[in-house]
Amino acid sequence: MSLARRQFLAASAALGAAAAAPNLFAHAGAPSRYPDNAWQVIDERFQKYVLFNTPLERQWTGGLWLEGPAWNAVGRYAVFSDIPRALQMRWDEASGEVSILRHKVGHSNGNAFDSQGRLVACEHSPARVVRYEWDGSLDVLAESYDGKPLNAPNDLICLDSGGIIFTDPGYGAHFEYEGAVRELELDTTVYYWEDGMAEPQPLTTELFKPNGIALGPDKRSVYIADTAPSHHPDEPATITRFTLGDDGRSLTDPTRIVESREEGYDGLTCDQDGNIWAGTSGGEGRDGVTIFAPDGTLIGRILLPEVCANVCFVGEDRNRLLMTASQSIYTLYTNTRGA
Image 1: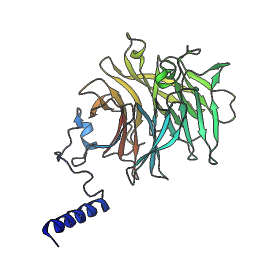
Image 2: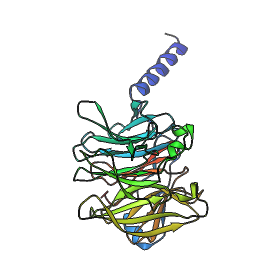
Image 3: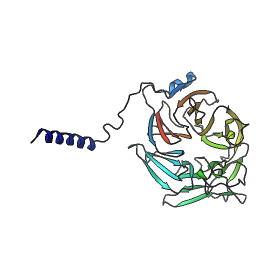
Image 4: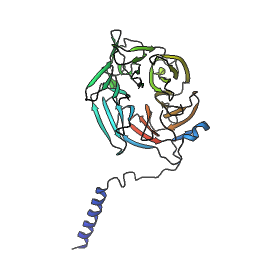
């Protein structure tokens, strides 16, 4: 056998071995130093949540505008939305793979799993809140109020009681890119809905553009972001804390705990200590996730190279933050757990 042929066969065998183990070099590249530069400690209270030796990981990219992550603990996967493409996507924690879960989902935005493990989603066009039942059928929960179509439901929380609270700012009615352009016929509102209701019940209309929503670990504190500056430039971006009423279907005691004219807050989640983790836009040095103590004090940031629309805690221990950021999804292990 000639030397050239032996060299060719040896090279072919090496390539075959590499192909048989494609993950071996999947993350090859320039190493990064610890701690990861994504962490930014502003208040010493945030230091205990920082893990020294965990990297920020970009799990996937290729979306147009990603939103609405929701964790399914049984299946060990997260659902998120690519709103312009009207897709629900699925990220598998074990394999790291991303796939299309559903297509043509009405420009789906926020997602959540209820206490029975059913996926509930906010859709922009048609404007409605839907639930995917165990048999695979689609149940429309809410699509109108007082005989008028909803604006464009945005985000939601599922209560242990079976009730749902959702925000309806109308962003899916402002651009064809994320829905269908039309005039809003209702005030921008936060609604309550439960099985048996013919239409949702308004809870508050005091927010200009009620957007992301999260439930605190006490199951009584409800946090809602207001992205007012998008359509009311003289108003600040805010996060307001409400108290869930004793009846489980009302909001009381609104308290504005965060206010900013330099950045905006979108999707929210809470950790077990009651801190609020908010998807943030504001340019370099602000884009990513902003963390506030329960009293609204800014304590830290996770900086990303893209605007972050929404966040949720995932994983077996619920200690891994999943961030839907513009075109990509990122994860980062933390030293806390989701509420």
